[in-house]
Structures are given as structure tokens and as C-alpha cells.
Length: 125
Image 1: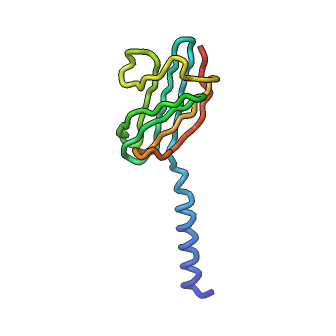
Image 2: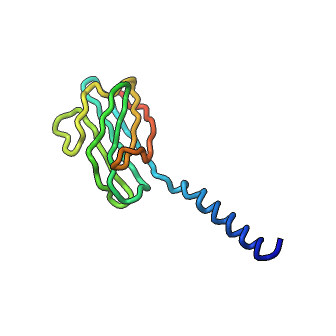
Image 3: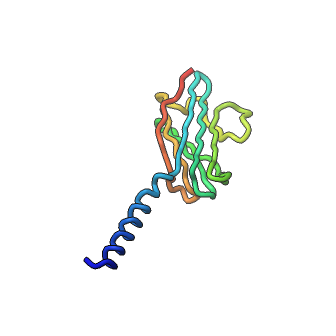
């Protein structure tokens, strides 16, 4: 192998590792949820996102609810779902929304494709 071929091979390998490690800066989702006898409450916080518009979807048992679209602030976006009336900015869900104290949370792009998701065990009070 001549010097030029080795140099090109090293550059190609370095580029491949660079692109392969880009997922280290992948989107992050944080889900917090709470189930009470007469209330369900879920918060979805996304970070390390590309600037843009997103919606959130929560799923628990057979229940599912999707928020309206929100624009990220910097690389972050936040969504609240709540059965309590009067929770400003929260997407309304029924008091019995959370089933078996578990919620799947997803952050979606405007077309409904999943950007990041996770499952959370909810606090029961």
C-alpha cells in the first residue's frame, strides 16, 4: 500500500467513526408521571433535539393521547398531560388514564415519526 492509499484509508476510517458516533448526541426524553385515585399527570421533557416543531404522545394500557405541536426552545421542548382542570397549557387526559402505573412517552416530529421514546414507572399516591 502506498502512502496516498494509506492516508485515504485512514481518513475514510476516521470519517466512518465520526459519523458512527454522532448518535452519542442523540435526543433525550425524560418522563415523569403520577397516578392518584382521582388524577393522572404526565410530563414529557425532550432535550438535545434539533430546533423545530414536535408533539408528544403518551400511551398507558389501551389509552393514548397526543399533544398539539410545540416549537422547541433551543434544543428543548416540554409537554404536560393532566386530568386536573385548570392546568394551563396541559393536554387534558382522563383521571384513569394511567394503567398499571406505567406510561410510554414519545416525542414525535410533525409528521408523527418517533424521534425518541421511553417507558416510565409512575409514582402512585
